[in-house]
Length: 440
Picture (spheres, rainbow, N blue to C red):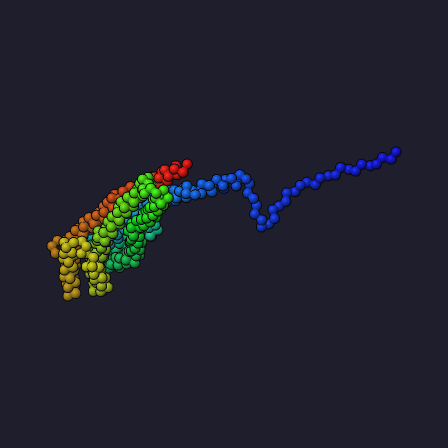
């Protein structure tokens, strides 16, 4: 019997999922489809549009809160920085004043010959010590000024070294002392003072930037407030059209919160900006003007002595005196009538000094320049120095006080802004929720 071989069992090929043809849309999983459907249902019909309006009103309310906080922080920060930069500017100018004051002492005492008057020497030392202290304070207060202040310190070491050389030679009656003195004055004028002028310019720019920035806070507040009010008012109108109810109290309360915050905050920021503008225009400007007048006055005093030290060849120093005196004439009025009269009294003495020197009475001219009593150069200048210094201190204090008052006069919307925005958002959500309940 023949056995027939049985065929091997057929093997099944594995089923390979067919890739979707390129370009044909794929069907999302049922779970994802259901999720999308539920989201779509939330925004279908009038209830859905109410939910969309609720989200819009809440978002713009919160944005308003953020904008209000940013606006107040902007103005408060600008006032704070203006106050700090103004103090730094006054500090830099005080350094300048002390240096030219010390130089005026050094040049005037040189005319005495031999040992200079102890009081004048002490004033020189005090002025240089004060300048060094102010340089350290200024470097700490404004890191951006540290490099220039460090360079200034180096030039002052050179200046003081030359002054000591001039004093040593002058005590011995050596003519070389006058050259050391001229070199010291040249170092101050050519190396030290340009650095100070650059620092003054930089700090003036910072102060101006901050004064301009005070008013920019209102832009944030008003922009955010107007946008939020527009959305909330539109939402009130839209609800009235859909529900035939003319007032939604919570939503209207949200609009009132935004409106009151915008009005009160805007008025406050406008008041702060106005106060800053007045401070910049009056007390700050007067502080700068009188400080410049004092610096120029000391420069003139130094050149008066240098003209006599040059003995007939000091034409350039006299020209420099006239240039410095012109600056004082232009700026000294900010110190008041009394300060201006004292400056004019000093100028009258200077004219007498020049007349005596030009007519060959050099010794008489020197006596008028180094004397300390009556209608002498030192006496009249000391009166000007004392009254102008007191007036400058008052103006500087007034500037700082007014900037501080402007900051203190602002309500605390800087940290209340966001909570107020959130409160408005919650009121808006409550108002819409009342109407949504009617559709359940």
